Amino acid sequence: MNDFFNAAIWEKAWKDESDLKINRMKKNGIDPARSFDHKAKTFNEQSFNEEGRKRTKRIMNWLEGQGVQFENSSILDIGAASGVFSVPFAERGARVTAVETSPPLIELLEKNLSNFAEDQVKIVPEKFEDIDVQAKGWNRAFDLVFVSMSPVIHNWESVEKVLHCARKFCYISMPASPSEHSLVNEIWPLVTGQLFHTKHMEMGYLLHLLYLKGYVYESLITREMKTTEVSREAALQEALTWLRHHRLPDDERNRKIIANYLEQAYPSGKVVIQEGGRFGKVLIRLQDQNMYTREI
Image 1 (spheres, one colour):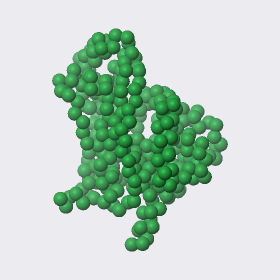
Image 2 (cartoon, rainbow, N blue to C red; image 1 turned 90 degrees about the horizontal axis):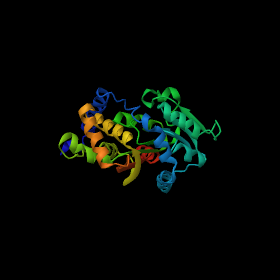
Image 3 (cartoon, rainbow, N blue to C red; image 1 turned 45 degrees about the vertical axis):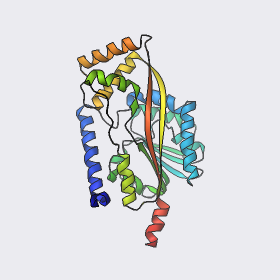
Image 4 (cartoon, rainbow, N blue to C red; image 1 turned 180 degrees about the horizontal axis):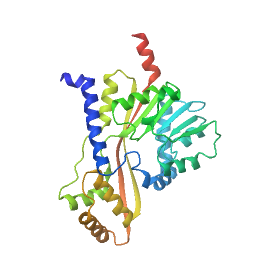
């Protein structure tokens, strides 16, 4: 039971699990920082359609309800993607520094931010992991550091680096459960002969370590789903990518199994996919943390 309150053990467990996952991805030819490139255009469209804007507004309204102010604030958006939050941050009057490394996402980000003044938005096309926070002058430089569903957060060391940039608030969101994906549920038994089993997610490490280290924060777990329609070929490629992520071969055998199934199950050529899951959001109050530390 003592281990439950031992932060060092939790830090090591998170790091070991994350390193194992990253090494598996790299072994299967997947670069975590670039694994989203092929979805950039679709992601951008879904982020700025009516449903995507509603989701963004819900999150921003939650932040405002916790006391976050956007007007005249400085925000560091790490893993900004195509600007799903950088754009509305700027629209609300914030000065935004957007960090993104994916070339197709940077291209879309530049386009989406093109209407704002240069002194209001700045794009940093670098890996946050490679950035020297002290040399950049980013130490406690931002009112809000915002990290939404980004592979940047993968162990406690990465969390500390993000926290060092924040002056008032730090927002981190991560999956709180494995992704729910209707196509995976359909093809997994065909390929493996077994049902798809879920695993615990890293959100638990984050929340527990914040608690053990005395941080002041609010957290929220929601379940969010979306429905998309793609071609059979796109569905096939998505399924093969999933196999690689889970250390299964995307060989000719599995390709034929999936392609045959898609042809029989979706004769129209259009595959309807439902995907989503439970997502965790946490807002860390650095001002309250600093006050608490000074009082002690």
